[in-house]
Length: 257
Image (cartoon, rainbow, N blue to C red; front, side, top):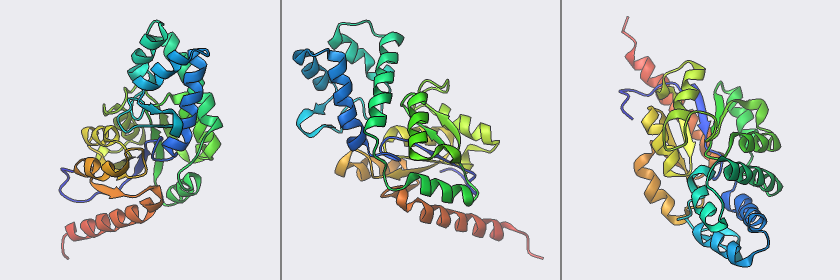
């Protein structure tokens, strides 16, 4: 962070997959169902889809190298289009998004208690949002299912018009909506895309180690993060410390009487 002193945070912007929901337990089985559906019962095509997705069928999970972990359907869609022998473009990506929305809801598994955490943070005076490389409709559907919607003032997906992470557009748009400088936003996420997006926008960056990158997460994320916590369960304590530092900084900057 380039700020000379800590600032009071006004908004908390969450990545979704790996941050609010368990990536492997949600998208592992969901992706298998989607790939099976799109392959139309053709075992060879299913195996090819799993190969380009770096997916382990026996364990129903992705390898950390999978393009699906942080990318949108528009990013990995061309790989699937080639396997399926279909044109890459909005028609296929829209179908993929609809299938993933359905299967993601069917297998939705939260990390901790997102709704309880959100209720507490809103009560503490923070505005909350979600910024995900999933489609916005899927993000809103999952937020509804998790009980998050009443606590959110902003939801953006890769198709919301702000670009996708690691571009900073989603973070900048959240700050603009709140009418605050980006340095008063914290971007919370489990992937380098989240932290690069936050840094590029000028936000505080917080890495959570609850995503699918495994043991490598801390080493990869720490250089990009202002703060590192195990999961959103540790977020309230971290934000309290940041608020205390901001208050102390503000008090120290007041002229003596």
